[in-house]
Length: 94
Image (cartoon, rainbow, N blue to C red; front, side, top):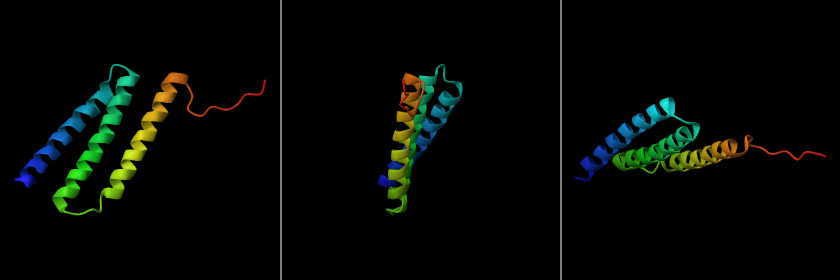
């Protein structure tokens, strides 16, 4: 029973990722695209965790952690760029 539920969840997350990809491509604004990319990162983490459950292994746990960290850093960088127009702030001598 658990195997069927996990496989259905994998299919659901895959469909959700495809729809988010469409939002990234056709998004009406840049913030919508950033949110869709962040949600795709979360879906990728969920799919990796579910595949790890199906295969009964913990080999994907490092991958899940890496994807989560990279997704967070990317979202933070995009948000800072949208807010201030630059990612790395340099001190300017006056």
